[in-house]
Amino acid sequence: MRTQTRKDVKQLKQVRDKMDFMLREEILEIERLQSLGAALTSQRETMQASLEIQRQEMDREVRALEMLREEKEEIEDLTNSLRKLIEVQREEYVAEKLTSREMWRKDLETLKMEEDELQASLKVERDKSERLKKKIKQEINRVREETEDEKENLRRAKETQMELLETERVIVETLERERNKKRAVVMRASAAVESERRSLQDDLVLWERERINLVNHRREERLRFEEEQLKMTNALERERHKNLAEREGLVEEKQTIIDNWQNEKAGLKEAIQRTREEFRTKREEVHREREKGLESNKLMLQKASEMAKEELEREKNHMRIAFQVKLEKMEAANTEQKKSMLEESMRLMEQFQKEMDCLHEQNKRNQAHRLKKRAAVEEDMERERLLFIEEHFRLEEQLKKMKWEKDNKRIAREEMMKMELKNSEMQDMTEQWAKLRLVKRKWWAIEKKVIQERKQELESQILASRKQWQVDRLNLEGEKKVAENQVKKGKIKLWFLSLIGCNK
Image (cartoon, rainbow, N blue to C red; front, side):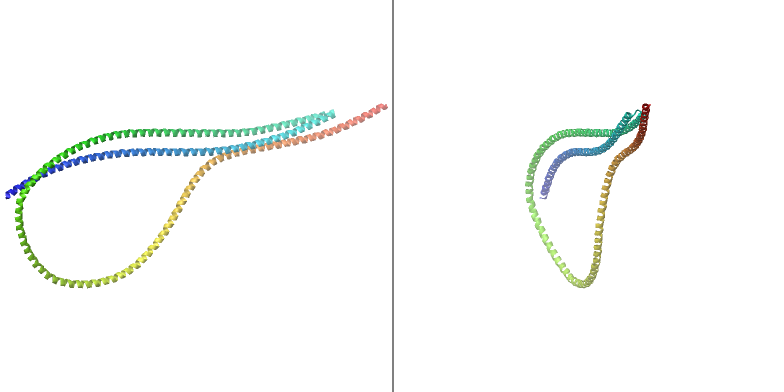
């Protein structure tokens, strides 16, 4: 019987080893399939990573294009701001030039008015000289008609006339020189105005050239940006076609791998199904054999279990009796120990109660002291908190004030710099205009002084000629009276002589 059971056990072990071997092979096959699936998943992950990298590169290129577009917009904003600045500066320059032109025009008008005044004064002097000439001619004619003895007087009158003509010629020459000087001043002013106009025209040409350069630069920038954008789009298109081709190749390769894996999986499923059927048949055979051996083993086990139960029952009774005796001994010892432990515990409880009362009183005292200390600390903390808040607000106000002062200083510094630039430009212009005005004033003062001196000389000459003419007229009148007296005397003499002759 024992040999039979040993044989059965050995056969069962062999069957179990075979089943373990088959299960191990199945586990290895499953692990191989899992490794293949892991390889496929890793390949899929690498493909996804490569696609993600390509997507990131495309996003980067799109961001680069957006940055280029933003740079283009910034360049356009800068060009617009430059154009506006150029327009403002050109308008300011044109306004300044117009104001300078207006000043030149006013100066020319004042010069023309002064020239008109000189011409009017010259005309008045000429009229006076004409009237003098007429008076002299009338007087000469009257004297010439009165007597031939007045030829000397006529010669003198002619000399005076010649002197007057000479003075008139000198006056005319001086006036001509003054007019030439004025004309030269006007010519210089017109030349300055012409130079200003030419400088304005040159500046306008320069502004136009700068505008054309800016337009050309902007056109070049736009063309360069369009070329770069076209290159980028072409590169992106080529990259997209390349990625599509690679993706199609990867999809085809993936499809082939999936097909192969599905074919292998189907073959593995068929092999596993076959092995399962074989294992099922073998297990059924082993089960039938084990049922046969188990029936015989069951009887043996029933007998062994009955014998073991009887042995356990005897052992249990023996253990129960020993435990009962031991328990009674332990109870007797425990009663005495419990009494002593109760007494000790009562004594300890009383001592503990006394200690607790002492601790409670000490705790009360400590708590009162702690409350006082806490109140003092809280008061100190509240005071420090209020001081800290006040200091915080003070520092915030000081910081705001400093920021405000800093901003004001910065704004004032910027405004001062702008004003200094404008003032320097205006100062340069005002210095130039002041220099021109000083030069003009000096010329005008010199010219006025010369004109005044010449006018005074002419007036003195005219007064001298008038005095000389009056003296000559008085002399002529005296000589005329003398001549008339002589004529009367001669007539009287002739009358007496005629009377004497008649008497004879």
